[in-house]
Length: 244
Image (cartoon, rainbow, N blue to C red; front, side, top):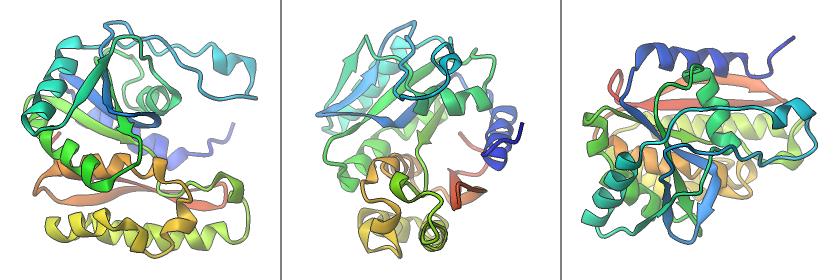
């Protein structure tokens, strides 16, 4: 059966082959709280946060362990920068977590901790949170952002969607691949980007990249995947070359 996301699946699988981290910290576009919040269960449950799909999609299990000590490290690092992060021992894996991780680490053997977005979607706050977590990269933690470069569900398959997605993807790629100061400036004012609000009427699926860019520090960014599905372009990015 044809995969709608073949390039993305293959690109994510390459990440799993290139990196064997101590743990994964993932910011999903499907979890937001009043304060930044980190999951802290040693055995996270599944969250089927979708409706109208075949019955077998509600039987999926991704049984990677949590890592409470990483959760505490996130809280402490953020606090050292004056940022409040709370712990949630009940939070499980939503589909923004288990779908990409099935492609990256299908054996589910790498511990996974999830980090929420903060309501209001402030680019500056998410960038600052990411910057506070940069030391985790040197500690063997792979920091992932789960979102998408185009997200207007009402407009998929429409003739206007493709041009809008390409216009914003070009702007976002130029931003991610620019020098770190320009990258930060552009992301903090992302709404000025070409096609920005058309591509993201609600920016929840863009917000994770603000935190990743913060965690990247001065390291370069690069587009590593360009997929074409549902009539739109969808891009994925990495920071730091071969580093975590």
